[in-house]
Image 1 (cartoon, rainbow, N blue to C red):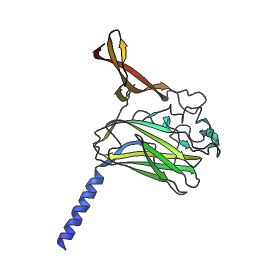
Image 2: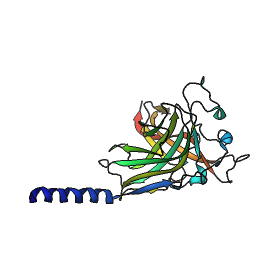
Image 3: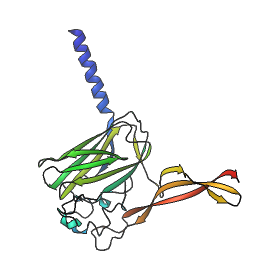
Image 4: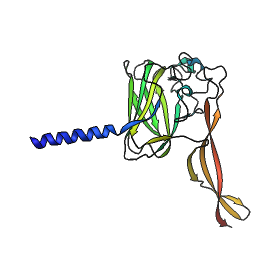
Length: 255
């Protein structure tokens, strides 16, 4: 009996220690059932497209941008105000987030919590969270106020991470707050002016005189200022667009 009690105490201590090491790595918005701190709130959804959101050219920089740079609402495939209808098929609108993380252990689990302020509910609606290419789907019920995504070990990595949100089978969902939770040692870092997302050698060579060079392909995201005319956004909001840089490395090869 004493051994069983001791085991229970040790188990409880281990669990308590595990959860005590978790912290909020990044937070967007306040958990108060309101979206007033987000862009276009409270009723500027008709300006969603003209503000540059949803076309995959706007990338939110976690750790640099603030709630006022992120839309308070995400449209689904039946949102007429976003240019969709029941006959439009799959919604192509996505909200990409780029974050730079340090001290990531690939054996650790992380958790993303999305708190909902409001929604236009439809049966079988769900919000997809894509983490570096891996999809996590969370079904939504009429009374759902929180979506929890358990991000498996290895899906988040050291350095740059891309997270994409996409709503399915509904008109819209309004955000209350977004949290990324994980181990104490993991921290969010500033992105930088031109982050290098990926780097690889090209599968071809270029000829320069008698020498051959092999291009080094860098995939980057460069910041741009988003047009804020006719929107509820303050000037100075940030938009990003992708561009690919190509650099040459001399392979010291000759004909």
